[in-house]
Length: 384
Image (tube, rainbow, N blue to C red; front, side, top):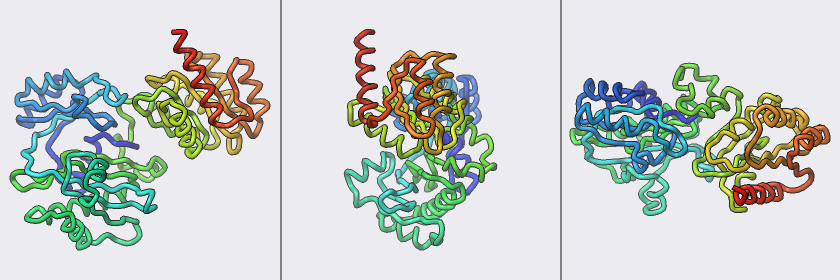
């Protein structure tokens, strides 16, 4: 679960990390009132689960409440990274003296969580890593051995930070580690972590991603756990489907298992398409669950074709085919659809799909299924 900025900041603030004063607004009038209450100048920020908001025009300054209203009018309803902006965060504008970066994420190379820090904040850490990899210092966070304050202090010094901010930054990183571990997060990031002109250390932005499989352990998240602003994500979550929208894609991908989904996405890329989403139906999927998966992907903006790549091991091909058929019968699908399906009850599943005219790859490879879908998409495009 990828929390919105204001949700992440609320959690960080509860753990003692400084965040700017701010209010969430869902209308231009609410934004104007928030600016008047907070005091100007303020910054009006789109609340969507996507980066690059500033470059997309989703972050605007305002020096009067009326301009905050105008900024909200421009931002609300925008599409940023494939997400419609339903809310903005009106926040006090900070007087920034220095921008830092702090983040914890799971490193595939190290097979462990890693705390990263650099004095070069305000840009993607990938850009810093490409340009100045020596500027990023790191420390393993495994949840078993404690991360001591003196270790974090040493880390921050190695990055080159000196002066009065040292103590505050060290304390902030300690609280970030605590947040990451206590909430079963997969990512906890503050970028930029700001040193203000008056010497405060403040989280100017926040990104928290919580492991979906661990949400049952965190009822305290309450409404933060509720999907906001993306009805497709809400629909998928309610059906217990793992779904992530990928802006700019044109191929909808449904797969049985995360590994198979990733392999299918790689194949789509390799053959010239772009995945529009990641959707894993998981194990034990019901007919209704499969139907919901197809509806979510079919309604994903930009989808021009759908490939379903499932294996009848822990799922049943006949049940999955009935779910697909249900959508075809009740809704219809306007884009090409190719299904690669084999395993338990495959003959029954194939027969159900054949009666609906669905193209099924019975014995071929994932590459053959994707190639056939792209061929159908090209023909469909030529006709239109």
